[in-house]
Length: 489
Ligand code: MV4
Image 1 (cartoon, rainbow, N blue to C red):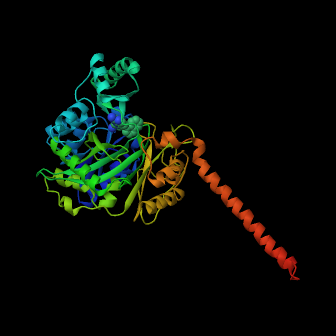
Image 2: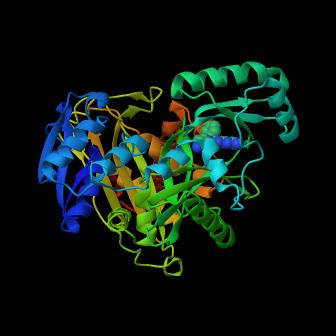
Image 3: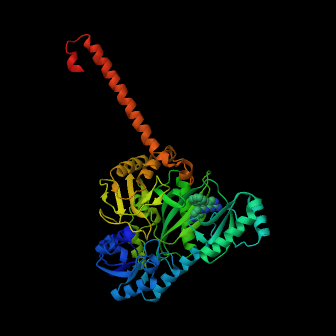
């Protein structure tokens, strides 16, 4: 593999390119008209313009990307995350053009893209799943019977959904008909597939995922977990590795289950198996993401494995160079997603010009970003500016490093979620590790973001006042014994 095309933009395009360069592989960038001056274009050896800014005229144009790949004579295409990364038809077209798709087979992508097909694929592998059904439900009487069996509340999910799209909570039988009808009609219009199924609703779960890696020689390993419970409307905010709640035994059981899921769909490359974990630490398989995930750096830091390098190696047909027993977790890593969104104004996108952009630097900080001072954040794409990743020997040290890094990160021109990240890192529920997927909904209000700081400012002011009063008293007493009282004022 001498040359690869990176079919993405922003931080992930750069992150993939850095590893490719390290491995001595030439790099082709693709870009939209909005990204002419983007860093990923400047970093690459060659760059090809795909078309106008909107994704459906640029980064989603598989045909143009394959044409660019053929024109440049690349050996492989890395899709990053988002865009075409989980598009089975694209992966198939890439292979049909004689180019390696750096990712799993179209077959694996397709199976895991359908939640029902995924359940079906893993059903003989003894994987714990949430009580419910593994087939599409369209009949109200069936739905009622299942709901009675598993008990309310239940969750209706779209088979073609994922990442929380097309889910409906049903609290009681009275709501069932209406919610079923809505779920089916939503799934039909959003995904062109009205299949829905029913699961028991796990009310306060944690969202924990396992990183897996598979090669073409039959080896599948897992690289432990990432805790992703801190999210807002299915948008992850902070991820960490390891999770504060897993025991070595549960970690091992989840890892083994994830490896079985990967084997069940004949997986190749890096993938992520999502689980729900309930308050009693029971875990349930939810779905598999067949791509490199946004939050992969926390796994890289605690395991020392470059996941993009391994993706490229297994795509070249190499064997994974380590065994499960060679892997271990060292220290703790946290990732904060920094979005151009205003946490004081309902997280409204805040696009514009990065008039000030000063990065935090120092030990135990990794910043994966795609912008520089003076650049515009385009309105056309995901508003994520950067991923701020910190490391420590302990969870507490990683959190402390994160707070310091947030304070050293200066962004002006657009509102960002940095203050929100600091709020989370200082919150007792987060620092204690006692949180679930409802953390943001339960604790966050715009006023609360500042309340920590307001409280601290108040404490500082009180302390100063007290110190002043004490010193004043000492000095006042001293004046009884000294003639130099004037000097002490
Ligand atoms: C669930 C669940 C509770 N019970 N399934 C969300 C993302 C998608 N991968 C599946 N998700 C969930 N599935 C059952 N049976 C909770 C989630 C979930 C969630 C649900 C509502 C609001 C926020 C959430 C965050 C993470 C996971």
